[in-house]
Length: 229
Image (cartoon, rainbow, N blue to C red):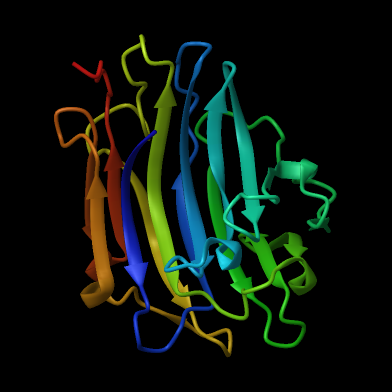
């Protein structure tokens, strides 16, 4: 799996309680044994031990030729837990219009936010003003807050195929915009630019990732084509 993403680390400072961003979903054309995704991820316990690594994420992905809405969670570093969409028994859906795992139209705009509700301590998922559902606090063993946020794209491919496109398939032309962090009181703030780390496994011959959080944006994506040679 290859990544073009930004990680935002809380470090020893105040922890995070959520993130939101707007971004488009793209019906990219890929081979059967490939996948491409764009997502926001909140994690806790990334320094270990693995059994206390918890995460929630949401976004879109293309696999088996279809563009899907996606969510995922795990509460022990994928050792015994870990699931996607409505296979996640702990996720409580509240929307009657938006379902995790549903097929999306090309170029649909998502305005996703994930945050911990200060009254219930459950982790909420919204698309704009629409409450999609929530992850109950009881399904986690180490998620009172969040120590790391990731935002960007990833791809995977069968080993004998060129890596698939990411984002909209053009280098650094897809974007997350209106990116904001959420604190423990539910208030929004800008991304702390002094706490970001950029990861790009393959470099800009294949994918790009370019943060511009001063303007609340992240550019990413590319045509792919890496063969492992």
